Image 1 (cartoon, helix red, strand yellow):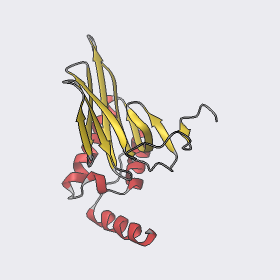
Image 2 (tube, one colour):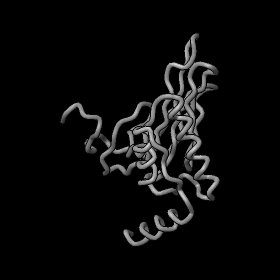
Image 3 (cartoon, helix red, strand yellow):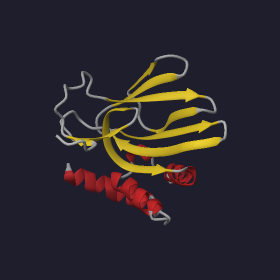
Length: 168
């Protein structure tokens, strides 16, 4: 096996078959949070750390931000689909075992664009968890290229639901 971050499953299976995300909150230093996602389990480790778990197939947005005495040093958002035990995945810090990464954006100006787009999807009456995975890939590609992503409309969402129904 190579050192590539994408792996085929050869590790022992996860006992609960869920994807676990470690969240940390140290005010004005480290902030990890979930912007959207259907949480299956929430375990508080201590006053600064929690483990959030997602069932296979769940889509969630994971935001990471860090600062030092001089300001923001890192900001990132990942939109991830939790994988089943038999599926390949890409590793991601603080996410066990990893997931199918639909979008990954770094830098606060671009992260804030993604957050605004998530708000727009919500505003269109669609839960961002239910939006088409291809749409999040589209948003990633457009923002990475310095372009505006297309709006996710109810019409696009209905087309996605029909496609998903046909693909079974």
